[in-house]
Image 1 (cartoon, rainbow, N blue to C red):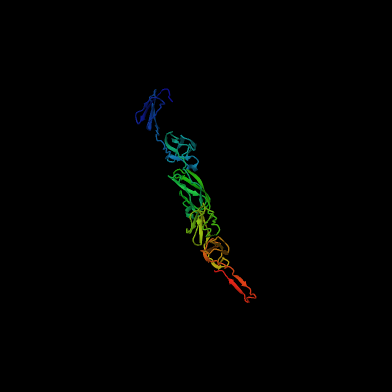
Image 2 (image 1 turned 45 degrees about the vertical axis):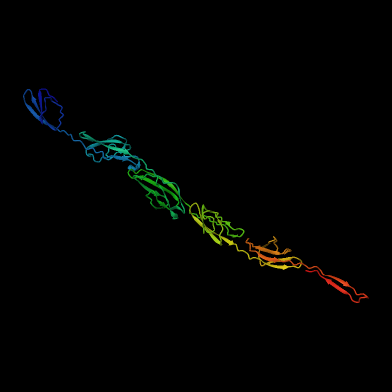
Length: 404
């Protein structure tokens, strides 16, 4: 404080500052020594004192860290990320984060933030108030990939050549920057590919994960099992003959059919081919169901086309102008050339008569034949009697017969 009767003289080192105020205000840019001489105006006596004003211009280090991303893995995928200011000055300072959305820790080196923004870390020396700042960019990527596990499939006798497995198809899924994982059921191979091979009926889940962000999505597909065999039925055994010359086979129990051998068949790939074999044949049909499973059955077509032996004809030419023809040595039904069907026929006209036999299998023999030559009965002879008389002692009997 200024005292009456005194004067003041201030000088500085480095030089450049002077003042006669008792209490001057200074603002040096560097550390400076100020000296003041106090003089008694009455006596001329004086005294000098000095004071050093230290200028502290250093600032702390602010390091907000490298750019970070809020994604599906940061902070357990809760939609936040922790910033990292650990490169900043740690002694005698305070911290303050600003910008965006700070969930917690705004006065620490590790705040938790939840929004895409530019965040600023300000570090301040407590003693001097000197401060510095740094920024860090926070982005968000919580985009999920596409997971497409495919349409429901069935393990049957067709899939994977009938080895009891089926290949799943996840080809509709995202393919760039992702990993795949199939779970569920029984996975034989390929659980980290888009085309795993599975061997059990179950629900299978495909999870597709972005490698960079950890974001993922899932899809499921149902796998069923049907390896049941069809019930093949080729029908009853059948006989063909000279009457029924062919037969229609009849298979059932499937969606497609394959007959063998092909000999005598109208077709081999239908359910009901016509069979007309020359020899007795056993036909086998492979019946295929919708699930690709197969079963077989057989049917025998017996061929009975044995031709009977022609009957033998015995002829008796009667004396009454008729002939009797009798068939023998046959089995079956007779038919004579005069349309008679009896074993014996009697005719009055000379000539050759034929007869054939039809056996039970409908086959007809060649003709047996006989020649009829009926005999004519001659006219009865006549007799004339001449009785003896008294004049003529002898008599005569005259017999005459027609010529022929």
